[in-house]
Length: 224
Image (cartoon, rainbow, N blue to C red; front, side, top):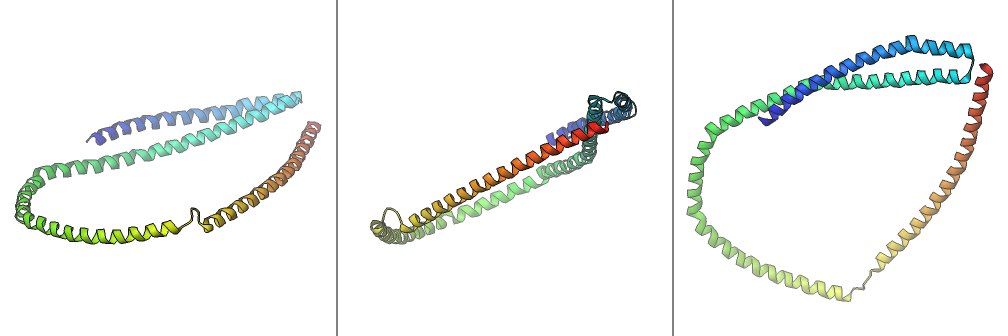
């Protein structure tokens, strides 16, 4: 019943969130349309008239900002759909809880009294056989204890003799650790060599990227 109350509150909060996020989506779309149809053309016109690279960069930055804002609106639309799906999910869980509440109430009224009667009968049967069961367990435990102690004495004596003859370190252990150490050293050398080769390639690629960027900027400046 507490869960049902909590789910009711969650449903109301989810509904409020759905309405708010819908409002933000609509407001964001209006703002994007205004930016594309009004602000962006003005900046483009300004850049075309001035011919300055900073004005052209401002146009590019503004376009990137609009694109990022559109992605955020898209994320909000995904959240809105999730909120829309959450509402029926909450109601389904509430319905299941309500059914279980009614079932539990029926159990309290009808089933538990039957349990009480059967428990009295079961206790009477248990008491009538308890003495015989206790005696049987005592006999079984005595025999089991004698057998177990004899077996454990044999095992303990043999294991003690084995350990007394064993070296403090097995030769196989030393072989395994030695092989593992050699393998580790080989891997470290390979990793270091690969790292040096990767850094050389990265240095060449960075120089190429820097050259390409400089050439592109010079080309853009000539075109403007």
